[in-house]
Image (cartoon, rainbow, N blue to C red; front, side, top):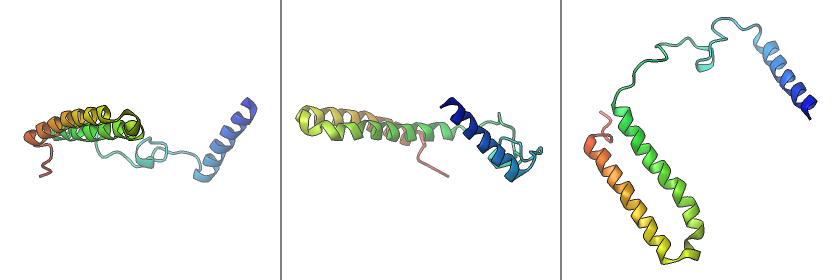
Length: 107
């Protein structure tokens, strides 16, 4: 299995070398498929992206917990529904906070 894996990796790297030719400075750059970067890698992001990230995480975590919950809600009954509304209430507080901070304004 190790020999098959090593041969597969060698074939893929060999095919890449044949198709792309020898890597130059631009092709070998690890940024946007070889494009030259327009700004420094350690450039600063605007602070508004922090709040937008928190809103995204709030909805992402919500869906992470809602999928397994939807599978077991029939078995657990009313307690599962109460727990989900408590969870959604906490997320609503996070969204209201983000709205108050201006994370939902894109201007």
